[in-house]
Length: 328
Length: 250
Image (cartoon, rainbow over all chains, first blue to last red; front, side, top):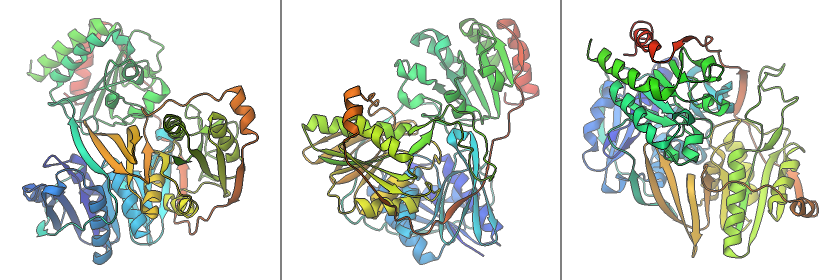
């Protein structure tokens, strides 16, 4: 029997998808170690406690809620102190977070404070005797490492989309707590610049539509946007060549040094498939590629490839996807 | 400013990897190693900050076998003033152990700023920088894509999912560097000559217990071979049909 503590990440008053995935991963780990409770910690501005029921519905037995105006922006040092304090006083076997901008910041802080071993960006979790075993794709997804973490507690951050959030209703009892204040100097958030509204994040989206140099010029990205609209809730990504040229913001880059995504569907438009790009998307479930060069490496990983000029094929595809979704 | 940069030596990311006979590591034979990409950005960021400030000292640190000295020399050929090699048979998978060794070394160094790459290519974990800062008890900005320092205060930008966070922080502090801060310069011939005379201190790394170990290393499952379904716009109906009936994503 071992209880697991989860950091249930939110931003702007909304739970992030990875919060529910982390609860699911924690539930699996608790069950693998002979059953135990999953307790989530949720922090945000007043009103955030409304989101606790979603955590309960996905398997949290208890939800610690910090509601404070100070938590509206990511209060990293105070959250690290609070998670550490809870983990220590509650005798948890593990602290589970998402490997997101917040989780990859907090995980090592909590591990250092607890003097606990940590595994990052984990895609599978299990127990081997008394040890937590974590699978983690390293070397930009080119080598899969199976790590053994000895000792208790441990800290684990899970790769977004690697665990599918499943409903598994537990009590989700809310317990309001106060954050532990940060000791010493801290990082202060002066501004949060929101990106383009109306599209899901690249890491959260079920469908990612992505463009490369084959689009010929920045203006042609509107064709990519139109295809994303046709799919409904798709995110739009780009290759490094395109972000380096300023066609798209740096934050849209998919690849080894950018975002790594694994959606249900990845549509590569005018992308040749440089090895660095493949490192960022090869774990997608279904890959579609449209490229004029039939020998482009992208076709080696594409489940469905079309050889052709993406500028000509895109409008036809967009219309066909729209029609298909409308049930024609 | 006095700036420490902790670097890692990693294999060329474009390599084709094989698993070593041990089954718990990659086969390193024939691979090219260099300063990790993100650590390279961190070295460049440190050099630029000190150039802008009109002076200071940049000290590079690395943990690992003798071979990491080559990367430390390269950082000095780019312009770092001196280097410290913390000797270990290998760089362990336990980021907290590495953070302990680095923090023990950096604690009394009097550094204004300690820089790291946001993560290294091989472990892709992103633990060491932040954990070292925690052990040192200094503020830490993770994955900064812009960084500047003026009047004892730092300013940075962090990319979030679909947004960006602008932050300020007091010195001394640690920052882990993302792409975008600075493209590393190539060492000049003069720099390479000068680096040979710069001090490189070597001493054992105080790693302590290693609690994260690699039990198995394997290549990921290959994707089924790709399939070209047709040419040009004429292939679109077949593509949409497959997406509906086979992939079931529409």
